[in-house]
Image 1 (cartoon, rainbow, N blue to C red):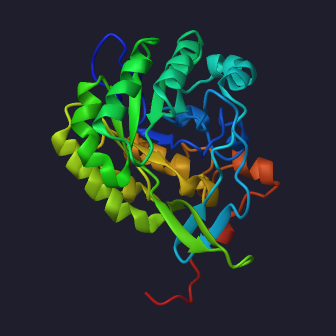
Image 2 (cartoon, one colour):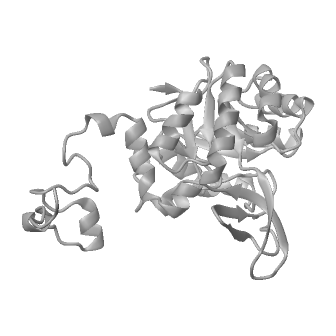
Image 3 (spheres, one colour):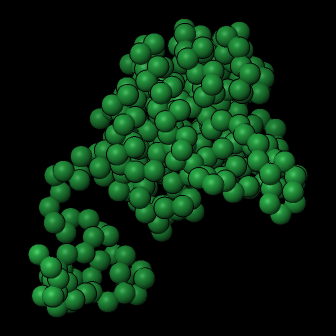
Length: 315
C-alpha cells in the first residue's frame, strides 16, 4: 500500500504507484478497457474539468514533433455538473480510485467544484492544476478555497518550470501531495497550415527535465511527490521513484503503446519479480493454451514446434 497524500484524516492510499496523467484517460477510462486492465492501476486521474463548460480550441490542435507531439485543445469539457451527472455513478463503481483533475481558474470556481465533488460518492481525491504563472498568493487562495468546501485529499499539479518555487507555498497551504509536473508549453509550426501553434508538449525527451524537477521537489517537500511526464518504460518509472517520487503518472505512452501501461504497473507493483510463468493473461509460453488476448484477436496458439530454436543458428 502506498500513501499517495500526506498522512491524516483524509489521506489517500493506493495499491499500485502507476496511474494515468490528467487528460489521457478521459473521465473514467472506459475507452481503454479493452487495452488496459484498469484494476491494476493505483488510481485514475480524469480529464481536466472546469466549473463552466469550455469549447475546443480553434485551429490546428495536434502538431507532430521529431520526438513527441504538441497538443493544443483549449481543455474542452462540458462543465463539472454535466460531468458528474454522466460519470458520477461510474466513478462509484470504479475498481480504481478516481481523482478528479480540476483546472485552477479562480478561487470561487475552485470552491464550487470542491463543494460538488465533496458530495460525489465515487471521488477519492482532487488534483488541482495550477496555471504556469501561478504565484505563492495564487496557490494559497486556490487551496484555501478548495479546503473550505471539501475534506477530500488535495493533490496539486505544479508547472514544470515553476515547480521548485511553488513547493513551500503549496504544502503550507494544505496540499496533500505534489504532482511534478504539468506538460510544459511550446510552439511548433503546423506542417499542414504553415501556422505557428502553441500548446502542451509531450514525449520521451521530456523525462530528463521532469526527472530533475522531481528530485528537487522531493528534497524540498514534506509531502509525497508524484512524477508525471516523459515516462515510456518501466525503467523510466523506476528512475522517478529513485528520485523521490512515491508514484508516477503516464501520459503520451498511453496513446502510443497502451499495452505497456500494465507492463509498467506490474513491474512497479512487484509482480514482474514474483510471478510464475503463465501467470499473466497476455503472456504465452510453450505448452500453454490460448490466452485472453488470443481469444480477442482470433489468434491460434503457437505450437511447440513453432518455438523450438532453429538448429542452424550460430551459438
